[in-house]
Amino acid sequence: MDFNITQDIFSAFSLPESATLSYNPSIYQKQEKIIQGVTLAVNQDPLVISLLKQMKERIGSHYDHTIRTGIMHIDLISFEQPTWKDIPPKTINLVGILHDCGKLEVPEEILFKEKELTIWEKRAMEAHNRATYNILRSFEDNYPAIAQIAAFHHPYFQPQEVSENPSIRRAGELLRLADHYDALSSRRDYKSPFSPQLIQEILLDLFPKEGPRINHLLQHYPSKEFSII
Ligand SMILES: [Fe+2]
Ligand SMILES: [Fe+2]
Image: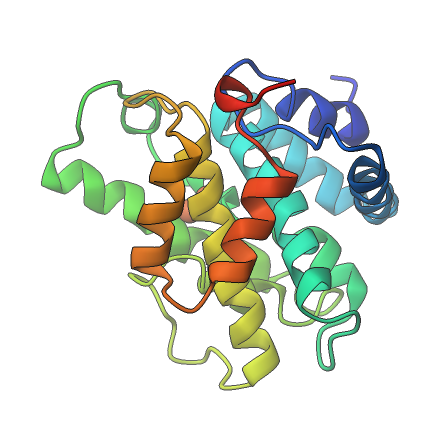
């Protein structure tokens, strides 16, 4: 299978019911720069390419979600501060686009179920966070803190050995925010995209201190359904 991460990123943002890249040329230019950085990071590492290829083949729409979240996460990271002590740029470039790689281990009938999951199916789904952590631990020699940041994207699995380092925790929190934003603004098997007002309401409830970051996402990654072009 030919693999082209740049194409995959643009197509993930072009789906009919998903968040999209900005219609504002100067914001769009910054987003293109982020995408270039991710492309360079991915293409330098055959192991990363191989993992992304497996995700593309096996987790379908979850792959699109994962790569959109990755771009939004990098954007939030640089919106917060230009340089991050303790986290190298190569980790920042890859952690978001790999954050749901653990879904490779979730059975397909659960991953793509169109009805509400049972309690047991939910547990199986939630196990993807632990699986992500385990997969990405083998990447930590090359990408310090990548598994630890990814582990913060859901509260239901926080490994004991995860760092107390504030930068790592903060990068993880921003990943959680980007992850929620994408889930709310895009179509899922069980729901349509939500309106910007509803997204703002839900996110402020979940993340009361993140107002400026929530507005940043709403302005830079509008939901196609609700945007006036
Ligand atoms: Fe997840
Ligand atoms: Fe996710």
